[in-house]
Structures are given as C-alpha cells and as structure tokens.
Length: 114
Image (cartoon, rainbow, N blue to C red; front, side):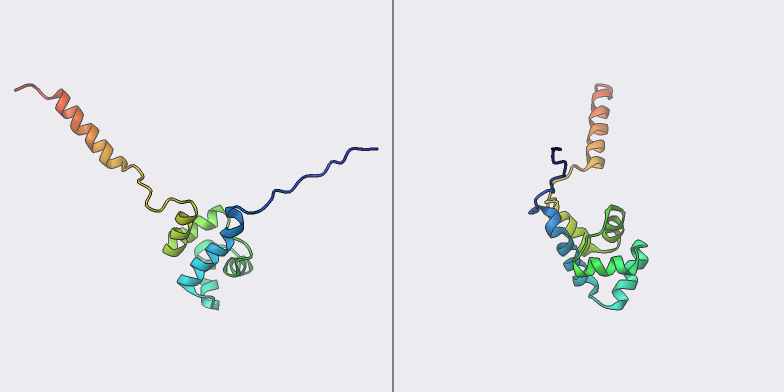
C-alpha cells in the first residue's frame, strides 16, 4: 500500500480571514458601492472590474501591488492596513532628525576649542 501524500491545508483564524472584509469596509466607507466606485478603483489599480467587485464585496482582498496603489489613493485603505499591521501610533524613527543630530554632534566634536 502506498503512503498518503496529500497536503494539509492551513487552519484559518488569522489576519488573512479578516483582511478582505476590512479592506471592503474601508473602500465602502470612502467610495461606496456604486458603479462609479468600481470604475475609479479600476483606474487607480489597473485591476479588472470583476476583481474590484470582489474587493468591494469582501470576497477577496487586493494583492500587494494593488494594495499599494489603493493605499496611495485612499486614506481609508491606508489606515485599515496600518491598523491590521498594528502600526498606528508606532513611534517609527525619524531618520532626518537622527541625521541632523549626528551632524550637530560631529560639528561639536570637530569644532576648534575656544
């Protein structure tokens, strides 16, 4: 008898289950469910109308490039993504401020003594 060689599917319950619904709510909040919204989202992302309708219905969520395009044009989608990634209010480092502080420190260290 041959061994069973079938793949085990992953169990649900993670972000992937709520992702399509969260994006759909964000899009509906900002654009509604009208035909105009479908056309606008199609222009923003380059996705087909059927794909956009699936996003609005919460059947599927946008893939990476489409999500980036949506976040670029839609503040609601951007905030939905940030909330799902738990990055709202995240004290991300301010690189330009750090560079300014390093420049100031170098200036103080290399300045001629008085």
